[in-house]
Length: 75
Image (cartoon, rainbow, N blue to C red; front, side, top):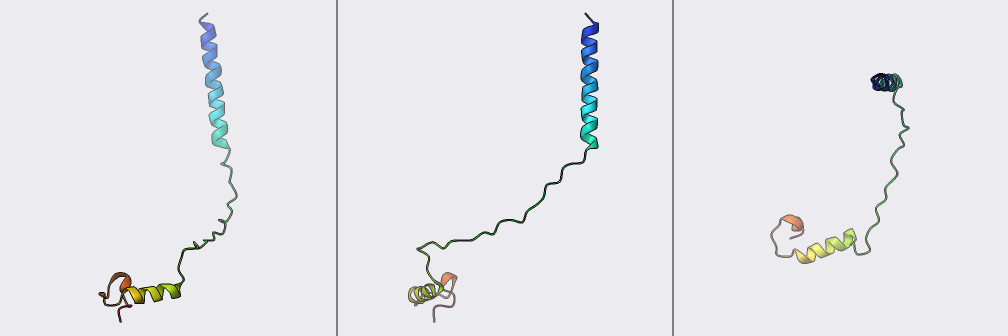
């Protein structure tokens, strides 16, 4: 009976040793890197055009301090 657990231990140790040796010997597989896909941003239908923003800021910033969003639009 005592020979059977000892032989089982020997087989497990041998298997583990071979597995570790095989893992260390093979170089890691290189994966081919692809360039990232092109990202396109879609404007929301509620977004304002630059001209509309200028017009709104001139209207809203009349008489306000020249700071923040109103910087340059108080004249």
